[in-house]
Image (tube, rainbow, N blue to C red; front, side, top):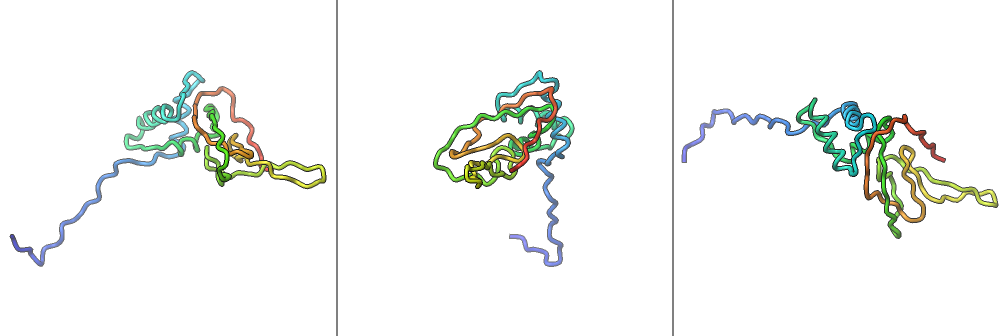
Length: 158
């Protein structure tokens, strides 16, 4: 076994080149609008839409990587892109603390009683159209399409 030279400097470790890069929010939004431009394209699943958007983003940034949750969060409320969600009810589950679609906070849905008090009936998202009552609604299918109409009105909590 060869002896080590005590005075020699240790070999320098150069950092490995990045394998992916997180694209800017604005770049992802532009790519999503381009993919569904004019209401002609429709995607029956999040995976199909994600693949198309990633391909569009990689035209500008070849190392771009994007996940489904981040894509949904950026597309909710984006003019020109319509997000439709199909839900399944799951009884007996604890109430959600944040929106399962976009990750925003949930506001209580209140109703006034005959005696003047208020009762909380469920929860709704302050950013998207998600809501739930007694049984928790869980998203099971996301579909994306173009929309010629602008941004839908946002609900206010309360």
